[in-house]
Image (cartoon, rainbow, N blue to C red; front, side):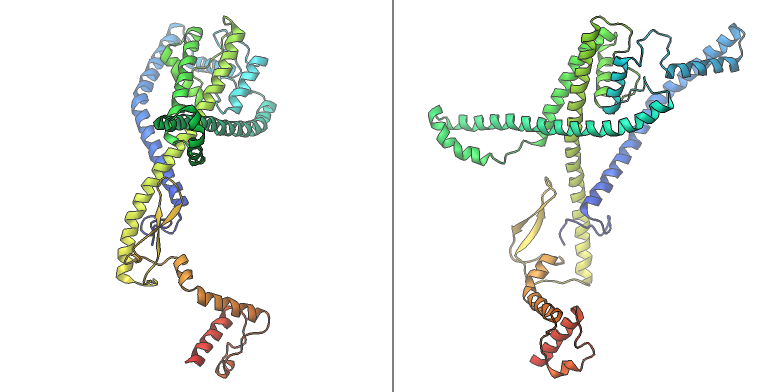
Length: 409
């Protein structure tokens, strides 16, 4: 049995797509567990120290001003509720004027969701559900179309460079290149760029956009340059923690130009980062396929040994012409010529079984047609007295076939 499809030892009776999905889910869960352990080890001690400092300051404040801790906690809760509605200690611009609302809907449909602005009314929350449902779906479609066109442009540019390299190798004059380059162009008709080259190009584009955006955010928002890079990654990847949000101050120098630049950088950054994530997901799928192939091949070797020992419910052909091989780069299979023999312990495929029995299948199909039309083949008298004689369907065909064999003998 080929190493494609079913793995009898580890994965049970599941196909390759399900096996790939389960393996990817297992790897993601393992990845999440490892990440949670690392973040907990890094951040939990800092959180405990901050909580102890805050408790110490709270005790000193209540003792200094002779305040009740309960009243102070209630006051802080009221401040948190006011902060949700857009009220803070620092002076900021209105959150729900037209520029602020436009910034909010942009973070919604792009799935960034900083969290600095959220609807506080029931009507606003209900409207957000339907608005986000359609808006997020439309934005994802836009990102996919952007990715298709971006890859098309990259493929065209890379193909042009590839053609130039081929022409330079020949070293022919410009007048003679047109006639001799036709075969090269025809051979490059189905040429596609490597996914790794596309990943590198998108990665470089994302880094350039992030560096340029950080150079703008750092002096205007008064952030450090590395903090600005951190904000760019969080925003462009649509993670959107909300700890750092751009364009939130009441006034900026060249405010209109800055907000326009902020919009352009976020749009370009999200598109490039989304495309990069899609390309990386293809590489991750190839890695998962490679791991799955390795596991399946080892398991199938064990299965072949067991089948060779038991030889139960197995049809062993004398010879075959082809054998299926699996390409790691693609999900398909291709056939290659072999030495005319099947490996010992290898099960016959349905294709080989049908090819070796096509004559018998043609006779059975003809008999089935005659039986269905009401004019079955006349057979010997010994079969007419059989209890299954005159039936319709596969059982009647089997009975007629056995009767013909007994008559011939």
